[in-house]
Length: 334
Image (cartoon, rainbow, N blue to C red; front, side, top):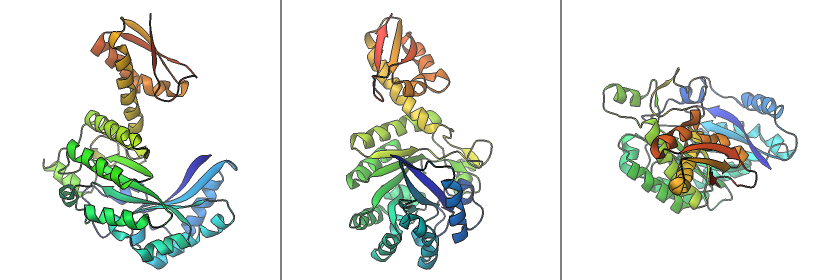
């Protein structure tokens, strides 16, 4: 059964802080307030495009901190989803919020309206990084929120960022370890982008903030992804979704943006898998992978093939083999 989200953005609603990296209007591409009628209209439009069977659909309230909105406004938005849940057309609601905006009263209300998944914007589990980012919450707030959510029957997602002010690769690895200890059902990994009209842009312009390079961000995200997967935690996204605003020709001032960032990370994994098998190979080899994985194994603009030639002197070609699973690699010399 395939899962689908119907995204509904509530930019910067409910958030009392201006995180240094945040401009939700630009990130979400939504410049106006979302009304209950907008919820209904968005659901109806998306349902026209989704398959009629073998599907699991959640209405996803993304953007600001949903549980920081006044409760009556939260309820008014969620009420528009209720008829679809009761009829079985939609399976639940997911939302993103802050760790310090979780309480029993809030969770009771979310449960009442059929919320199934809560994602917390953790960003870091290192207090000095959280302070530098002006997050307004601490690691303890995250731990307390997770413990409370676990008392209810919600699926739990935790979102982390890399490359924040004051952050290091070591801090990001430590954040991942602490997130793993909390045993979420899913995670997202977002390399920090410098967006127009944010305090981070000011820091960058003043030379007080140095963003990650694309290569460094990919290598770190690869390590984090493999850590989560080893712990049986699903990584549902790596990198921000490109939009009209989130691209190099619009609001992204600096940082490791790539329209297919997640694919770059997967390609980096394949590079390691392939080179490990090529260590005793001759000058030419065919690398077999699952046909669905050929583009990842080849790399963006044939980057893996080119890099392997430069690093090892071995010419390779990538071919498909349906008997191989995802990330299973077989090499043959010729």
